[in-house]
Image (cartoon, rainbow over all chains, first blue to last red):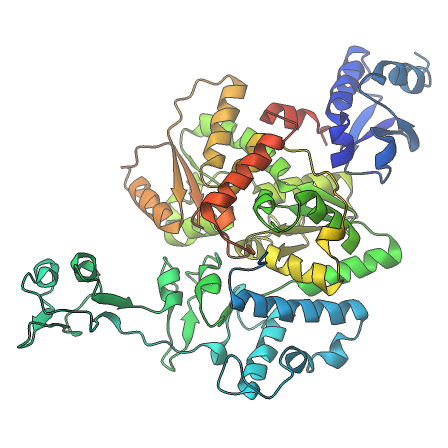
Length: 81
Length: 475
């Protein structure tokens, strides 16, 4: 599974750093480093809905406050955890 | 508000603008010979002896705007016919000499080159004079002037001399591409080869096939285009067709992080950010080559990162620097940066598409920390390395020396090569003031521009280097 976080200027100002940090911690604490790859990209062209995140191509809008629920629903569940 | 410091820059800009405009229209080849007449339409000369010479010189400027001569090895090129072949008489006594009694000029002259006529007026014996300039320093009437050519005076590393035929010539085994001569020649007879056509090509391709062209902008942009806001410049870049604009300052954060680690490990280091400084070490102080930091420059570092996230992308660096045009020819940098534009060239590119920055909205530009951003001015890099050491919790007694301009660099390197430098980190900036003094800047105001860079630094959302890096997923 590949999670890509937009780290373009607009998403950065909306908290992409916090989203990246939280996801990194969650991947580590759930022991998923071998199964989940975290990547960044500069701008997904959807600045209005940032912080933009994709999971294997599917698009989501995440904020620093919703990382936990996003991770539960879009990462842990599909992986059967 | 004035867009340029000098009329030479303005003329060069007009050529670049028209070349880019025709290239965007796809009719450059048909119109390439018309451009000089488009710029100088009348019959009255305004710059040279006649319009025909003016147009002949403009035709040469068009060639340089289109990439310049492949026979010239460097990125800086002399336009022979534009060179006014200034007299190169060195120090000379002017008629301001009052024939005083003190004769301080005679006292300080180490070569006894000064004599006096019956009226006590000084004369310099050119066969003895070594052009040390001491007489000029002590004359109470400032009656002795240096008639050195402006290009030779600008070139502190003495890579420019007079050819036998009178025009300026560049010794490319010495030239570090800093562009000081380009900015200082009052006749605009030295110019930096442009890659503006490569950029137009990339943008046109992108319009056709959706390929992505990223702009990586140097932090000194905060001191440029000062008739508009930086956010409007970013917006203008998007209007040109750039997919996204990334701060080179984020690369500077990455460099500060790894350069501070490398310094602690090795104990002595010279900075790797300024390509002219690095080239200067390799060509003039090869014995210090192994002391140059192994980091790529901030430009190359962030571009490498972007290419990892988006391998098919094209990257254009936009900054104040002519030496960056030489840097991207290096094998270690070539894979990451596809073209370099100066701020001068960017202004031409905006106007070739009639993009009025003042009519643009503001688009944010944010990723880097305060420390990455202040790389743009002398002293910023040393501050950032000190911060890196502090953030890593390393115990290292940093003694940094920030060299403001290539002359200060030379002094520090000379001492370092003899083991007599009381410092363990040399921040080298070839341009006085740092990048804000770069030859490709639209305007140069050392104090004001430094303040602008510091203000831009303080506006950064990320306050530490570690914070800026924490936002980057490892690739």
